[in-house]
Length: 178
Image (cartoon, rainbow, N blue to C red):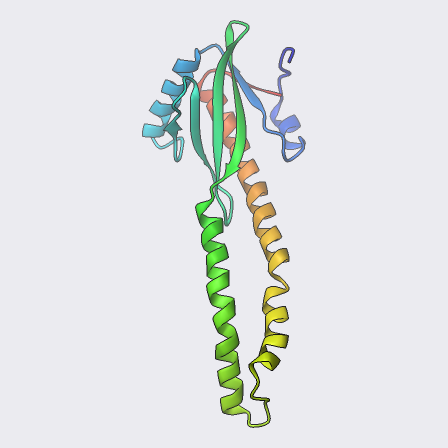
């Protein structure tokens, strides 16, 4: 990797969505982490945690409905420090959504069967009949819903991550680089 190219805010706005910039700063990797920890105590870095390795840290990148973790690594390079970033979706909420879908769709078959046979005497009293139309109706849209949730969350998290990266550059007297 050669020298990093400086990115203006206008260029960052038109950058491809999955690209996360780096930060070049005159601070040492240890000082970067300490500066960010100090900013976190003032509420400027939500969810900030220091990593186990020198120069490693994480902070939150908010995405709706699934939040992400912005993982940063600061390493010395050419007498300066280069902070690189990557995003990772937090796994708890997607697992909760999946469990909620499973426990809400399947009991709906029994509830619907019970209501239809109670209120409509003409409705067939066979569970398979309800199952045959109810399951495709409720499970069919789930892949599209899930994709919308994941892609929307990723897009929102990338936008928030870019704002956080700009804030990190300002806090560390650095510049956003490609």
